[in-house]
Length: 122
Image (cartoon, rainbow, N blue to C red):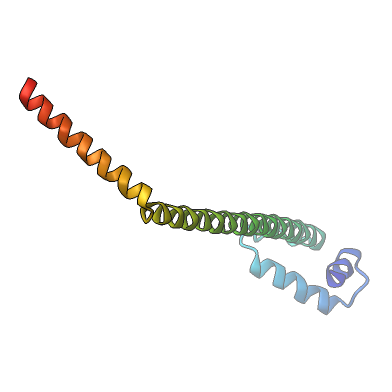
């Protein structure tokens, strides 16, 4: 930025200013070839530089937001997986009890009896 201010104010060596102006005109495809006003080139470069900085900051903020959302999502997934594991363990514990087995057996007998009654009555 110091070199740009030097070119802008005209207080620096002419050769250095000329090199910087050449650099700016070579790297910028949007500048017109007939536009040799050093102040206009410097101002255009400053505006591009400021726009790039703003774009970088916005992209960085968006990246941080996405990383935070990803971390929250991973935490939520981990909690859900732990809850699923707990429910699966509870279900296995229930299935292993005598009461569960008796309930399953009663349910089978009820279905069998219901089917028999439908055949007889229906």
